[in-house]
Image 1 (cartoon, rainbow, N blue to C red):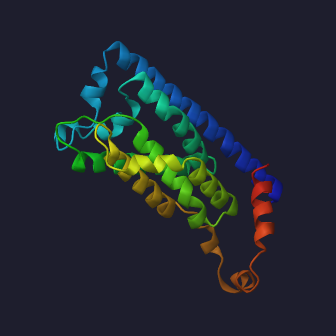
Image 2: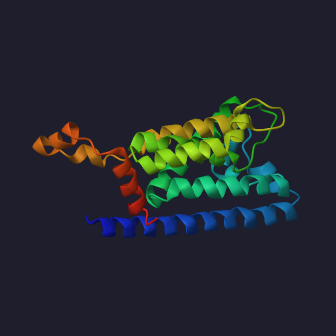
Image 3: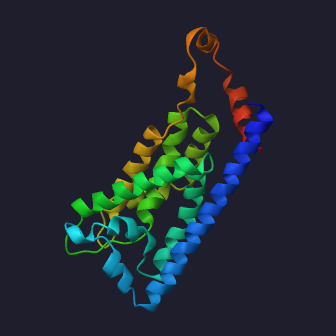
Length: 224
């Protein structure tokens, strides 16, 4: 595939990622309006109640629900940034990663949180995407993603405080979401390099590409 065609595909996927995240944010804000109008009864009814088998479907619905305007406002910015960066290389892979993070965060909270509490909010996804963005470059061996992961880790280092136990905060969802994102980085890693066999693979091992050239190639592929 030519470099121009690769760049076109990457730009198209980035556009899809942008609109997917715009649509997702629009959805949770519409749900928030309905939830607010119902005095947040939706969060109580469809959030995660630990160890209650009838509330297991809350694993799916809880990320769409919040407890206040401040709650959804605090999640929206990081959700869009990390979600877009998690999705820009491929929306299909992103959907798989999202499913894994939601299940890991939801079930982790369901098994470990206080049974008298009800958990809701997109923060499990936020921490999952954060973890995924941090490690994806290392698993995929894409230099631009390694740089993005380092920059995000430095710019959003305060997010790590959300992984610590704190009263009144669903930190269990954060921890298991973050772990799910890291696992997603491994399970959904780019395996294209394994397709080369025989003598064609030998030159790559004998003469690895210059790291600066590889980084420039990554930037060019993104159309930057």
